[in-house]
Image (cartoon, rainbow, N blue to C red; front, side):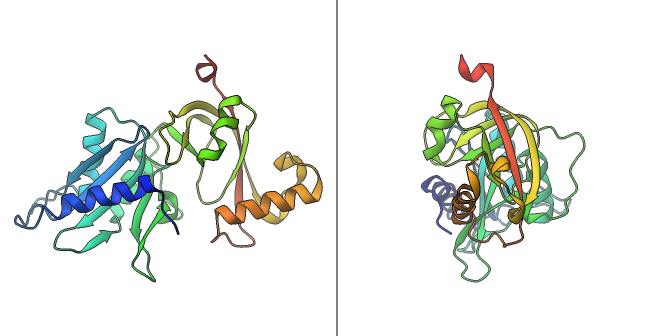
Length: 241
C-alpha cells in the first residue's frame, strides 16, 4: 500500500528520534504523531519497574499539551535499528478511545515494509470507553476538497472506519488545506452487493457499478461481501461563514 508523503514524514520523525536513543535502557522506543494542521509531535517511552507509558502515549500527551486536537497518523520506531513497531494492546485501546480516526503505521506482516491501518481494524470487536467523546475526522483525498467545501459532496462510502453521527472535521489527506467542520447526519451499514442508486445518489445500475469500482480502487483489500458505511454529512454554518 502506497503511503502519503505526510505519513512517511511521521515515520521518518519517529525513526530520527529512535536513532538518538540506545544509551539509556529507560527510553527505547520513539513515537511521532501528526495533527490536522501537519504538525508532528514526538515522545519516547518511559520504562520503569512500576510501569510506564509507551512512546505512543507520551507523543499523544505531547500533542495534547500543544493543543493539537485530533491526530491523523501515529508511528513508533524501536532503538538499535529495530524499525517500525506495531502498538501494544494498551496503546491500541487508548488511540481508539482518544483518536478513533487515526491511521497507525506498522510493518506489513508479509514484507516488513511500512503500511498504514485505521485503528479500529487493529482492535476488532473492541470495547469503547463510554466517557470518551473525541472530535471525529472524516478523511478525504485532496481531489474532493473543492466539492466538500462547495457543499456539493455530501455522501461518502467507507469500509473499516467505524463512523458515527455527530460533529466532525472533514480532513483532506496530504495537503495544507484547513479541515472543515461538518455534521455527520447519518451512517447506514449495508453490504456492497446491496448498494442501490438511491443509497449512492447515482443514476441507475451503471452508476452503482462505477461507484463500487472506485470504492474497490480505494480499498483493494475489501472483500466482495464486505459491509460498508454510507456516511451522509453537511457543512456546518461555521464552515460557510
